[in-house]
Image (cartoon, one colour):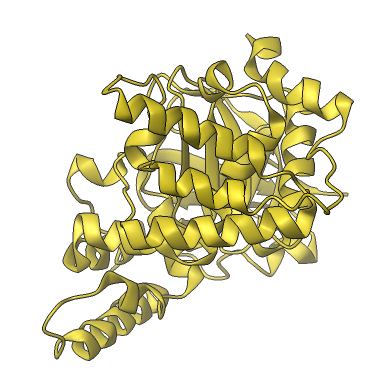
Length: 347
């Protein structure tokens, strides 16, 4: 039975019953509605409280409290701070190891004439990348789609494309937002905006987009884009627990190099082939986008601004089609309907 607790988020003066699920480096709080609220375990501070109850605060959120009645489940207890601490304490062992590690990376790169973010991020532990991912937020107007049928469709799609993705910590979610776009964030989080489904009505085309985003994550392109955008000094500040300018949290600000886009296309084509998914729908999407570019038309797909298109990219997907292959839809009829139902059923 999962460990239960009471949570005060510091924003409203109401307690919320939650179930606690450790997913290092996160402790996930699941409320009664099934919504997940991950909090970095390293940010938890154990407070001195009355016997029989443990209380934890959050280092950077005043008023945030998590109350847990003893005894604790061993699976949860093993991930929580053992000693009481102070909210004003200096950097801990984990923070210092991050800072020393990054200092070593900077020193190793100092001899390069041209600074290459890719060289740094290939050596960056995924746990650090997840810390960076926590900085990036969705647009204020965006709300997560909690439709369970759509959630099942998304899980089915990502499992079909990359069977190891979810076990490796990659996540795929859909949010209600009119922008037609898809983004990959540091740490393996991938987001589809509901406006994308206003432009695309083929699940196999969506599968091609998801495969492309998975490739960006697998190749560490996302972390490299963060370093390129913010600069290594700002990244060091973020990993050390500091704060930076507001542009660090712009989920739509990450852009990839043409080389990274080409690599992601190559990997996406391979994933679609391995999964037996027809590459022609995603090729058709790129062809329509390329035609719009040639006609100097303004496309409503913001996806094109962060993922530059060309007839050459469309041709690569088109050429990967094998007339002798046995393709099957990326989703069955029940999941296909749920995918395009998306946020509509929740609001």
